[in-house]
Amino acid sequence: MCGIVAYIGNQEAYPIILKGLQRLEYRGYDSAGVALLDQKLTIYKKKGKVAELEGSLIGKNLHAKSGIGHTRWATHGEPSDRNAHPHRSPSGKLAMVHNGIIENYAPIKKELQNKGYVFESDTDTEVLLYFIEDIYQNDATSLEEAVRIALKRIIGAYVIILLDEAHPDTLIAARKGSPLVIGIGKNEHFLASDASPIIEYTKEVVYINDYEMAIVKPDELILKNPGNERITPFITKLDMELAAIEKGGYEHFMLKEIFEQPTAVFDCLRGRLDAKAGTIRMGGIDKHLDLLKEAKRIILVGCGTSWHAGLLAEYVFEELCRVPVEVEYASEFRYRNPVINPGDVIIAISQSGETADTLVALENAKNQGAFIFGVVNVVGSSIARLSQAGAYTHAGPEIGVASTKAFTAQLTVLYLIAIKLGYAKGCLSRDRYLHLIGELALIPDKISEVLKSAPEVAALAEKYKDARDFLFLGRGYNFPIALEGALKLKEISYIHAEGYPAAEMKHGPIALVEDNLPVVFVATKDAYHDKLISNAQEIKARKGNVLAIISENDTVFQDIADETIAVPAADEMLAPLLSVVPLQLLAYYTGLAKGLDVDKPRNLAKSVTVE
Ligand code: AGP
Figure: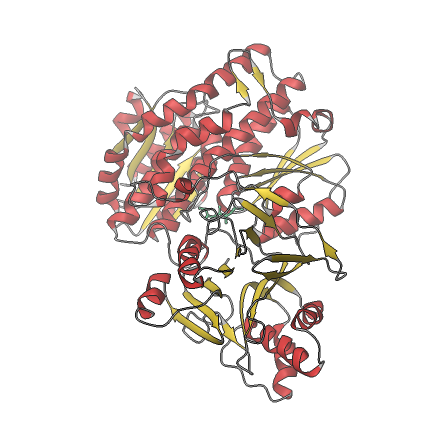
């Protein structure tokens, strides 16, 4: 949830750490801080965004060759200077940053208070730091060993990095549940929550696994397993360019990523779909095709926008593969004690690949014998490494907190899998198979067409930006898109919005309809179209404002609706890849019109690594 950066080497540490925090700010922006070590340990931290920390340090002596930094998403203790990281130990000699949650911090805090320790902050992190130093000082052991002993008592998730005034040439790091990547340079090392702060310095990285510890010196990286044995670091080459994590001339990452969708979907299809040859090649599927064909049940698991992708995939897999499909909120699935049978296939959907609830839900299901197939965007992420097979969505880095291009890339991968599996199982005729892959190949260009409606959508956003509530309605394949539209608007504009299956309105929610309530219909042409027209007339009858995403030349809906945004015609099953784009734009332009920070909406973070 938080963003962590550290550096040790022969360059000035502060500028590297500051830039790293700016790159990781989408992970949390409640407060920021750095600790620098040059003979003496100095700590600077401030409530608010990284820019406020940077501003407060102008003119200060920030010289140091090693340091740690943190940008916070508050869990324990409100956003404030004293709850900001890094925390300093009672002796003043240790500094620590932490990403995660220490669930059993309260009893440990009590123990330490009984020993006379007085805490500066309300955080769980400070408790762990005091606990480590207590062992370090009283058990006459090394800092590394004190960390190992302390972590044995810890319940929860963590990445921690410690700086020790007594050993300026060494950083100690440990991981369980939260992500940590170490970049290998020439006589220097870069540590971070993901690769974005590292990419401009080196492409050689090591992904740290759960329960591993790293002892990092300028010219040496020592990795140890839980048994305190040295392990050889597995070095991966990053396949990402710096430009991918820059705004590229756009005002916001969210707008850039919305406009990157034609390329993202194209990259997702590249090397997999050959519409001319009528083939779909996916290594992760081909290798396990028999197992997937025999699957007794497919369970789609995810959170937020990824769950919406799963909900749409439920409709598609049942239609094309004729197999029982369930879609699960990972946070419920992990605790509900679900019945998992041999032959069950779990498809895990995650942009970041680090969402804690999804990760643990998969670990539980895997331990019960389910086969895990990952649909993930971040290469090398925990969910990708936990899955027995998978397909990357190749959407490129997604920095804006609101997921946009990763969603359409997730849908594209899920369509590819369902079409391939349905055809392999003989549930899909050759004609339907060729039709669907032909249509899929046309999607990138059709999304480019939809993006031309951006100015129209911006005008709609300006008109409705002061609405107190919004409703989003859809049926069939468009119902999950209605939910996604509502989520995007909530996230970015803070307007209360709900998505519903349109026919559900009569069972209660229609009571919300009053003068000028904007009701967005996801109404591209499909088997439900006539029914949806009746639903729109029910809203009009109660003076609601009907805004509709329609298929081009749909004059019927045009006549009923107050506002329409037309998208190119497409097979009804694939139309969600088009109809979601105006909803992403509506959220973006509404947030913009309200003067909000659309890339870093309040209270949110890009990757939810705590439960
Ligand atoms: C979507 O815009 C949100 N950022 C959020 O709902 C997100 O989809 C959810 O946290 C799941 O994240 P993941 O795909 O990285 O697992």
